[in-house]
Length: 297
Image (cartoon, rainbow, N blue to C red; front, side, top):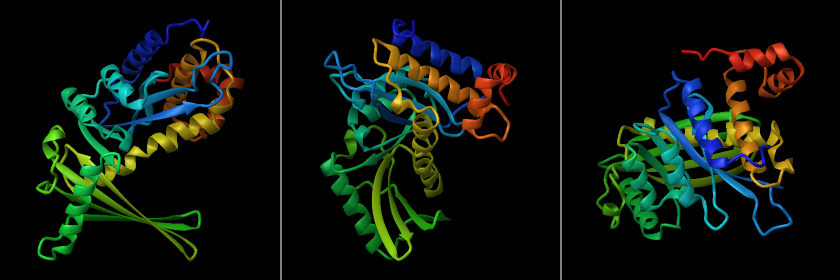
């Protein structure tokens, strides 16, 4: 049955179910990212493993919607479909450097949302101009950059992150190509494990200019989609070991996993998600409680 359901209709129904089930949860930041489901490829045809791009409500920890990436395309073309599926008006969209495309940021702004997107060398000119801007501003002692620093300790390591933000876009030769670009950001990370030190620098563009702390919150919040969605799908739901391959089965089963995560995440007990899942499988009364649970206001 799941293999025969129209996945696009199922995705629309899922998005409508989220809006109806969680009406009080108004997201401020939506992280967009893709995930490949291993073992979903059917060896009898030429199709690749299924890839889905999901919209994750950072503040509330639920999936708002997802769209499959076409076999002949990539996540870049799927992102506008997600923006069209999910109500993103007045939200902050965050995405990785793959989505640093002029058409993508225009789509986000047309939908009434803001963007904070990573920049890498796939946008060579923009990347170089941002690097030059921060190097120049850091060398100018008369105009210190707004800076915010966080230090996290745990699991035998110390991670220090320094965030920088500026609205000085005068050195960006392609500034006009990026819809409503207001600021650029830089994150310098240092990870210490014992005597070993690792450094990493990342750059971002944003249609926001609301302060370096807000910028830091968006950058850190984006990784929730990896830690709280993709990790749970792999480790708790064992998605990558699912050998469902027939027709639309892999795509529709992924939607069901997202439904389960949304419901279990909102159940208020202090049990782990894994324990909640096991209890729901063994106890019909608890399962009914999870499904009928009122949404917190």
